[in-house]
Each structure stands twice: as structure tokens, then as C-alpha cells.
Image (cartoon, rainbow, N blue to C red):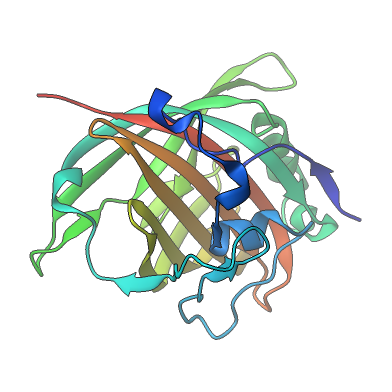
Amino acid sequence: MLNSACGILLSAPPTNAADENHNESNAVKLYGRIEQLSGQEGATLPLKLVPQTPLLDKSLSSTAPLSGKLARSFPLDYLGQWSGEMTISTFACDEAFYRFDPVEAKKQEQLLAPGTKGTCSVTFFVNGEKKIDMLTTDVAFNGVLDNGSPTIYNLHLGNLQAGKGVTGNEITSALLKNSLTELKENVWEQESVTTDRDRNPKSGKIKTDYTENVLRLTRVDHNHLYLQAATVSYGKHGKFQNKVLLYGTLTKVLN
């Protein structure tokens, strides 16, 4: 049985006054992995672990020759830190999500309810290949558990070397895939897939599964990026467990 709370992830990024009179009938939507994940109740793991090919939606126009292409680097002027508020639009899970650790799963669902707001900082740097890369990031939420206890929960959006779950579960991961796609000018989508080891320190039980993270960055202006994100967990055989969809605007931190 699927428990889902619906929200709008695919709202358009903020526009300036010059864009307000844009004729929507001439717009072309370029579909990437974000749309695939938000357009279905559950989610299907790309089992071959190869980069997804963005699909061009021609229902509104048949003239614009847009197509996604794999990229090796973000733009140079992304360098530095960007921070802002992220809002959860969707939390959805399958009953399989509760089988390993029901207490952990219940608290995650409680803390990640749609409408919950968290803070996020994204840092871009020059990697060893002299390309502009993005550090692993997370979204920090201040929540309150059923017993009234305040808690801070970090939702990881990328390759997590080591971390803790809500109830203290020990989590480690290894990167299986990391791809960057330029969907169109000023729109970038990064997808990563990791294999994860989750250990409950109280019971000693261990599970291994997969996590897929997708971050869509749309340039609003020189100092603002609109971020849409999805993080999805799958069992060791690729069965959907849960997903969280978020959105928000990041502002460049000026030194």
C-alpha cells in the first residue's frame, strides 16, 4: 500500500518582470529525471545505472530543437557557496519502507511531511580534473518528535560516506553512478546512485539498498539558483521504498 502526500515540485522557477508576459502556449517543456520521479506514485530504479536521456515534450510546440546533453562541468560562475530554504513538496513510501526499522521509518515520515521547510547550502569547487563540481550536500530540518523532543534531521542529497539516521542508525554509502546533464541553457541536472549499508546499533540488523539523488539547478539570475531535488530509496532488488521531493531558491553567498 502506498502512502503519498501530493505537492507541487514542478512549479516554474521565479521569473523577472520581463518574463511575465511570456506566451505560455509557445513554451516547450524539457523533461529530465525530476519529471520521471514526480510523475509516478512510486519510482523505478534505472537498473542499468546509465545516464537518463531527457525527453522533449512537444505537446506545446513542435519547433524548438531542444535536447539534453551530457556535461562534465557546471558553469565557472557557479563557483562558491549558495544557500537558501528548501520546502518538501512530496513524501511517498511503500509498505516495504517500514519492514527493516519501523521506528526509524515512522520518524522519518513525521519529520519529512510536505510543507516542512529546511535550510540548504550548496558549494561548487574546482575538482582534480579542473572542472566545476558540486560538493555532497544535505538539507537540515528542525523537527519535533511524537514525544515533544526537538530534533535536527539532515536529509542527504548525494554520496554519503558516513552518517546517522533519525534514531541513530549507522549509514554508509558507495557511489555507483554520477552524471551531469545540461537539459538546456541555464538548466542543469545531476543524478547520482549509491549503494547503502544501514545498521541498527540496537538490534544489530543490517540492510543494503540503493539511493538515487537528483538535483535540478535553474539559473534565475546572477545571484540566484532555483533548486528542485529528489531523493529516492530502493531495496537491494530495486523495489521502491520511499521518495522525498523538494524545491527552493538559493542565493549566492558573497564574501
